[in-house]
Length: 190
Image: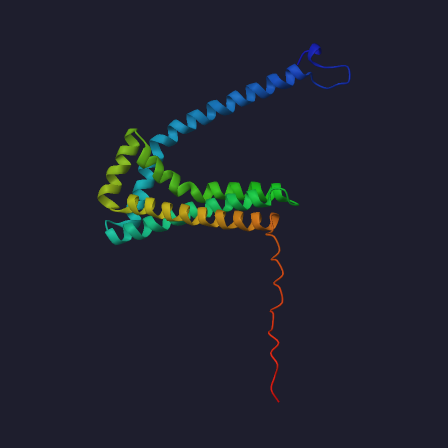
């Protein structure tokens, strides 16, 4: 650092600070790009082989594991994200919301790896598709069905929560008092 980059009060200049941040950000971006290409060649094959070992060619196991991964791998992250948004403005909410988002990403990783096989167009994704077709039949379709059920459940829960909040903020008009019932006065015979 040269003397022109240090202010009289001993702190770095803003130019030096921003230059350091930009160089750091570019280094992180370059590292992420390299990691992406390495993982894109490895993850789809590896994940397909793990699922193939789990299912071992059985349709019923493929459906069962696919539903479990699809349902839990979608519902848990969505509800964790909902928790994070609901608790954001409360005391310690930002910490809990951040932890919930991190946990949601971790729980969603199996579905994201399956998605990399289904939507990927590289050689590893095609190899993963072939492995799943042969050794894990019905896994991909059941995983999609589980994810759709989880999404429908989540949207229903969000609708119910939103409806309850709306009703608390906008209470209905109080019911009009009912007029007393008119009783007929008929003379009684004695």
